[in-house]
Image (cartoon, rainbow, N blue to C red; front, side):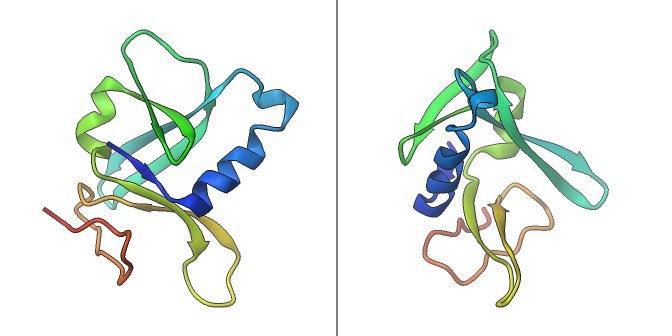
Length: 110
């Protein structure tokens, strides 16, 4: 479903040590806009109808209706360009604006 790279898994795991996130699971979502997809992630409780999976030791959630938008996505934690801050990167072949980077773990567009 969604692949969370080791670097992203480590960063998410660090966030689980925050007392405010205890007992919560990371949730991924996307909004489809005219400019492409806008990605959302945050800690949440599990709800009826959620898809509950695991990647690289990190449990995650997504709403069932998000499956078509997020299936095959890779979440990484890296620099977009050298010298920039590290951030979460969403590589999603379902996004019409997606161009695969030259990396081994990046999904290809269908």
